[in-house]
Image (cartoon, rainbow, N blue to C red):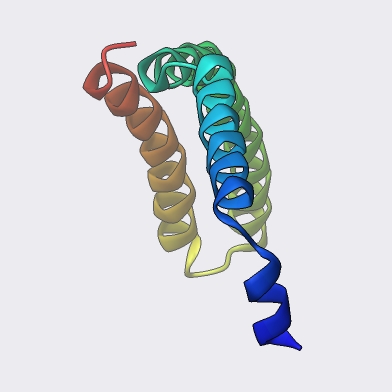
Length: 110
């Protein structure tokens, strides 16, 4: 059955199929966009979200600082011996968030 089908395909049918494929290729090429333009648009969108993300990191750092202050205060009033360790950990995590946000901002030039 396959040999019968291939026998029916003549030279004109091959020419028409090839022409249709070439037309489809050029039609696709006409509607395609420049890759650099897409990358530049993505870069601009990410840069626009970066300030919001930095503000979010500062807000998370502030909330962590408040929670840590309450935790350290309650441990200090209870007279627990590991108060200095907890205070150092909370203070360090808040400083880390602020430093990371600042360094990323200056590293990427935003």
